[in-house]
Length: 315
Image (cartoon, rainbow, N blue to C red):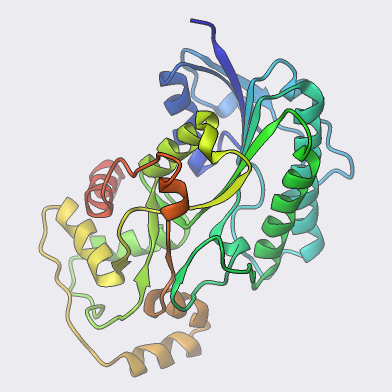
């Protein structure tokens, strides 16, 4: 069978480290582009490559996309950070994304899968159940740049033979995760009861296994073409459910108890963790109906994936 070549940018990031071997196992020749390609794990069907500096005024992607059938774009600034200027987000997460789409079009790439973020659509919390039909309302520089990057991909590829799909994942977790989910997993590992039982917020989350399968699906599914699609696990969970699932993976009881939320919220705000508290106690639930209508379905349930993550990660 003829090899299918896919360029994966951001191959050394959390998602990239999982996605590159996954695509290789599924029959792709993967050009894995990273800032330090020498640090990438080698394997059959994986070709490490140097990622250009995405903050350059002009980013030259031509050498990387040449000969590729597909592109999965992961590279960029991965989180919201008030200390990062909006202009830098614009350069790295928007301008470099648009120039990649143009290069892919010029090279005759068949399809570009752009991994954006739910933050292109909303802030850290949102009322109701979000869908792609809701007007986007990003609330920080990270989200605004992601939304602008989505528009640049669409604009560059409209009317061309290069197809595109944009995915908006919610919070992604799995072995080796950093950020908020890593902090929550550290809490779950403590041999102490935790005052999380009364937290009310429901959260859509996304296992790395389900994100991998969604990207693989979007590389070939005709029905997914030229769409912006939210992606998440099947069922949203309370924070208490997330921690209980993590502790289940460690072979332990949930160990959660209830306290009034107001004192905890006050302490969080005084400690400068008001937004982190909002994530714990506020809703962010998305519908994946549009993606499922193209033929995709999650391959693993959240509770199982959370337990598996805890069993895989080092303490």
